[in-house]
Length: 155
Image: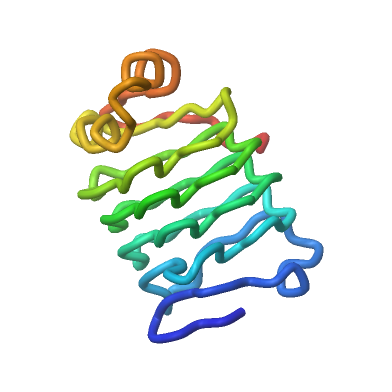
């Protein structure tokens, strides 16, 4: 693992060998900043804990096996292209603490992607989607709840 000034910059396949799930360490305040943190590893599930303020650009790029991301209350920013090319990503659970989502944060993700979020976060997500795709994206992918209730036990 490479950590610089509280930012988790990279986690190698060797660091994660045998693991399919990852929870951010409590001493981390940002994921990425220089590209993919978990580039093309075998993680299936990631929990981003509330001590992380920001998920950087391309932080999860090419996480091909990734299926679920749970972002806990406290995370405020998801930068541009944060989940770019997560081809099997089916579910993202967002907290009400989200204040900004960068452009195309969910580009080239699975066509089955569902984003569970509280009503207070919906406008922020919708603004991050290019206008030509908004209606289709929102109709098929957004699940707006006041309290997300996704059964994740089997994932």
